[in-house]
Image (cartoon, rainbow, N blue to C red; front, side):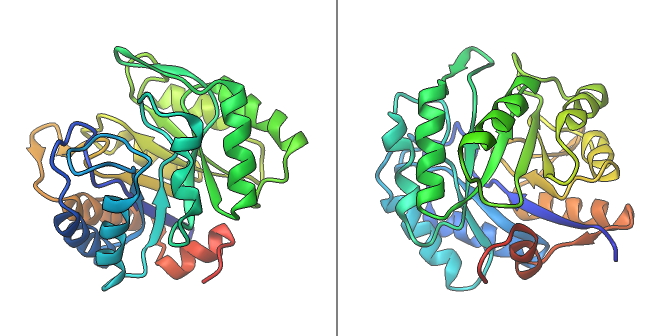
Length: 267
């Protein structure tokens, strides 16, 4: 059987100050038709600010659900002044199937992304209590070790899924060497995927897939480039390009149903 790779689309740039649920949904629906099995959404208000108010998020998801069975993933992160309780607000929405789980603090450009261990433990407890599947965001090697410690105290949903994040200034760089190093710390039998912030070529994605990545995240949250000379107008174009890359490497683009089976989600 060919290796299956889940494409996750993160459609909203963090700097956007106008959030249009219908426009986002149209782009996500087209992305799903072209190969995206999951959509990653932050909880934002109409002006793009992170918020515990789910209104705009829920409106967007309602529009998506009219035409697509794509997996809904909500972020519990993002640089903000929200409390961990506020950041966990989407965990209680029944439409949310998976979530991002941040397990440590890190510099992201000029900002400090604060995730103290007491907040991490609170979020882990709520993720488990609400039966939401966590995608564990890994910006540095030490975060993998933190998760292995947490696994001793918490009954994480299985399989465990790490998402290696490369390219943020101040965190792990977008190099093959960094990818290989972080991958080497993930125990065999655990799933992992890749996010390349600031991506302008396929080098990191291609190497990650060759090393066994089962998820690849694309979208305007990370980059709107196909290559150094080409920017695109829609997330769907990024998804189509990534789907072609996956197939060119002899792998299969996972459907939402296949992705749910991979992650042990209820269909």
